[in-house]
Figure 1 (cartoon, rainbow, N blue to C red):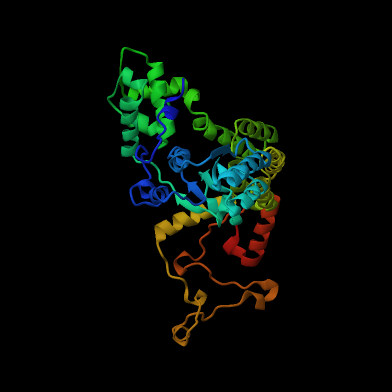
Figure 2: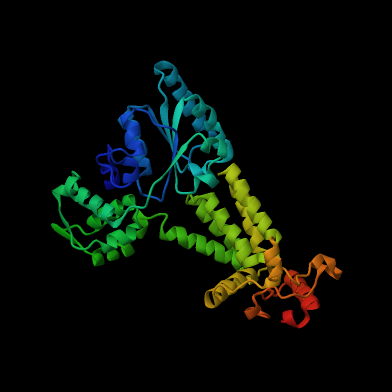
Length: 423
């Protein structure tokens, strides 16, 4: 049987729920349908808010030839095949086809490059869907040829409207005696994702088959614990796997790190999500114990972005092993946390006069910049000076980690500052 979420997919803007800023009468996409013309666009928003559905509606409303590719399992070859078919259609009827690419942020640079010519010539109207900021994930030449429309998270009222529509309009559910006594758990576990909400509703009904079903929070929670894997392959497991991966690297176990990496790759995880988390870890858990870790992680992210799956699996593995085998230090993380806590407690303390710029004579007259000593004019490019607010003079925030590199930092600070940096 066709899943409930697919059966309930809206066919027109009149049935579409949410995104009123784009779809209501007079809004930009409603006007585009009225004028029978739409630009290439990027639909940016969280999962389950209607990006794919909106693309289908636009294609149907304009009676355009429609092609759908997923960036997870499509490469340059598939893109070129679609473009060639669209080109033949364009030459025949002088009308561009709509090419919808789901999760376009997963396309590598070369894959995105392959779209440029067809978009520029008007052979295709591109609609890309992404959960990531397109400014970072879509190449500039392609982004400049597209309008970016931001889709907002669905509200609780939107989700309740979707539930009501499913129970009253779906050909299967309206034949069953189903009522919703409490919807808090349904809304909470859906996470604002309409597709997940309908999948969960369908699952609760299937698991609790009775002549009459009254859905409450307890029933939903029990169903979740029993059947989580049936409806949510990327929710809890998604976070459990990345947690195991990061903790394995932090724990300096390359075997476990590569194993969890393989689990995520096998499950279709976004390589940029993995690379982004390693980039954070390189600073948070390795930091100045091995500054090269940040460079390796950043190069890994850049390469994964350019190359994409399947080849980038090798680069992810190399970076994960390097990070796992690196010495560890969280001193930079602890220092910024300590500083933020200090700011929260002490407020906006004034900058000492000697550290202030003095661009005007008046500022100089009242002492701005007075007694500031330029470090490079002194031996070893160092001069003792108070650089903190006067109320915090002598406060220690950074504590070097116990590793070879930061031991050098500690020795430099102790030699230069003597007691002020004597740990």
